[in-house]
Image (tube, rainbow, N blue to C red; front, side):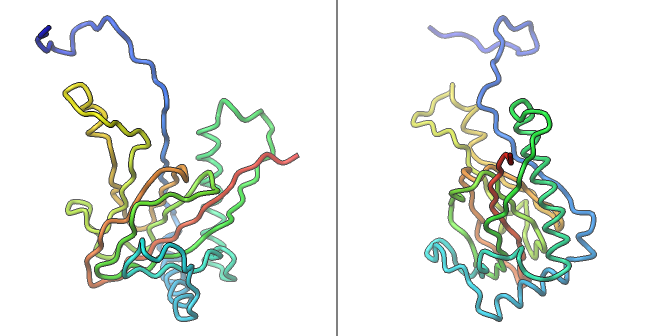
Length: 221
């Protein structure tokens, strides 16, 4: 049976059921300009000390990834960033679980992995997830020559819903299959660790600096 498409502004006899919602969060650090240069210097120091993660090497190119203990580095800028980031993670998790955490819950945010990236011309990171974690962070310390319009070096997040069939009835899901983050310096994205994401190929003369971490969140007795 063929049915002619009608104007959606007219009264609609059925109602959608909002299910399987997914939240990503962003925040802007008001002290970014104060600490940016010092944090970049920490990243350079870690690289000069040959502190590499040595994880998933085949998934990366022209990208330095530090060992996974960045927030433990004894530096006032690192600690200021860590304190602010921890508070933002807590707020994001609190919002996502607003109907599930009992009032007065004592919540622990445990940052168990943290690192920096320095991406150079031609650098990228293939699609991946962050296992054994609940929430993860990408913080744009210096976007370098990233370009949101040309997709140069942007982070892409992929929908967790995979449709094996496509027709006119699935267009709504196809157009939302992935999102690209319009990054700017001092911006942080907080996302569920199990969401697949990647860093598209970066081209530029300037270095691109990113801070990242994984955390676990628990109720304390």
